[in-house]
Length: 247
Image (cartoon, rainbow, N blue to C red; front, side, top):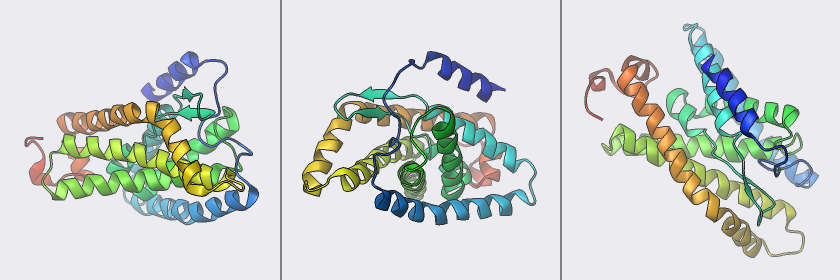
């Protein structure tokens, strides 16, 4: 219920006309669009298999995935126009499900959220769906998951690890998006100079947005730790002996 209310609030406050979110329909040439689809499909298939395996013995797992999908959908549906780039910046939100339910399921969640946004909200597109899955789902999820696990193994605190995961996941998403745009639209222009221009165009909004996303990720994980540490134990985020300890 809370997720549905959040979705409606976001839809109400969105401006009537905004730049295209994610990579817009028709921007990428067909050969590049197909390439990103091919790269995305194995990760989506692995996410479906992982979800089926985990939900066989736990009926509560699918509702949890649905809640995570709502989180990603709402967070990534908050566009901030970047006039110099002709598009929008926005949080990715994929680090949160990556930490809680794993990167492969996070890719699946992201794919579903992106498809709904493309079909019903004209954010992103069907031809660029694969590219958006790769940047926001694959790169965003695996970066967030990898950073979180690495810092936890280095004995970093739960909140610090989650913050860095959200921060670097967000920046990785936009670096990958910049690579996808530069490679697909460069024509006869050299790749690296165009990539530099696109990255610089995103800097004014994405640097602070990354910090905000890091704070959101840390807030979500630490809140669960304080209220439902047993759930984090069940999901394998923390060990049983760590429940009830200090952050």
